[in-house]
Amino acid sequence: MGLAIEELYDDCLYHIFELLPTSDRIIFAQVCHRFRQLFINQCAGKYRVYTLDKDSSRLELIQFCICRETVESLTIDLDHFDTARCYRTYGCVAPENCFRILCQSLAGMIRLEYLVVKQESMLITPVEKPFDQILTAVRHLPQLRRLEIRARDDCSLDRLSQLCHLEHLQILVPKMLLATLAKCCKSCGNLRSLHLGYACIQKNLSYIVPHCKNLERLKFGMPANSSEYLQLARLPKLRELSYCGIRRSGSFEPLLSALAAKSQLTHLSIDGGSLTLQETCQLVRIQSLRYFKGFYSTTDCVEMLGCLANLEELCLRMFCPTDVSNNLLPIIAKCKDLKLLRIAGGNVNTNSLKDAISLRKSEPVVLVVEK
Image (cartoon, rainbow, N blue to C red; front, top):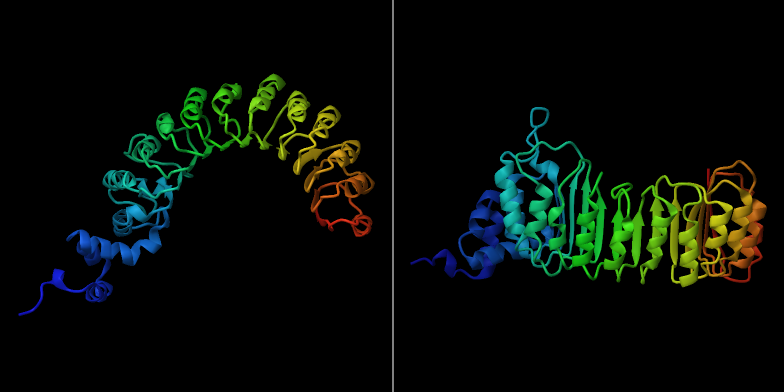
């Protein structure tokens, strides 16, 4: 009398499993807990780091959901649930059902550490508030520390504050309510890194400062008055500050002055708008800086950067055609720890700079010149 399939040893079951088509493997996994575990043992490696995108099939989604406890990093492209199928032949046939399956499975991803949810094209779907539904599904996951939200259209993020374990948060959306962000920062007491898209928050970013006592890295872009930027200096653990986008000339002077007084900032990037002489005067007082990236339209300000004695990496973009080689020489001579000097725009005598670098007694500098 033959053995029942559940009586076979694991080795035999693995051999049978390898012979099955995908649809039968899914049925196999649904027979009992043991068979599901065998399925996971065979397939989990594919889903530890996984992207659900427009090309993912329904069967692949089901397999992924079966292995949900092993997922560590997940990217969800909401285009998978788009119903505008008249111009394409990919995506989910029944978006509401697939999305429901996904949300039910998300709640069981106990090892999930990194989640990206993105909407990068026009989305037509019967699913209401997809971002909020996903955030609600993952709100109790204890290992989820890193979250990225990317959307080309306005979206609801009202449930963001339910995620209390976040340490790294990136929000690249057209617009976000300041109250929603402040509530999120208040609930995430261990938030260490915050990246906001340009003009995502329109004003009064200072409202989040009292709730970000552990914030170390902040990247943002927001046209505002200098008094609003100044409040960011109150962040007690801020180490890295990046600004990207349009701003008023001279608007960073009070902020840079306040940061110089604290001397804790190690990385500063101001990517947009030339720094003025007054701003540079305050900037060079931040002796804790190791990395600096900035834009300049005058050569005098460049030479002043040689006062940053602890600088290790310097990236400059020049908005003037003047030769800045002589202005870079004091930086090469005075910044003993300098390892990288990157220059874009302007005119540079590469040979002159290389000669100056060769005379350094300390570690040589990597010179990168971009046109």
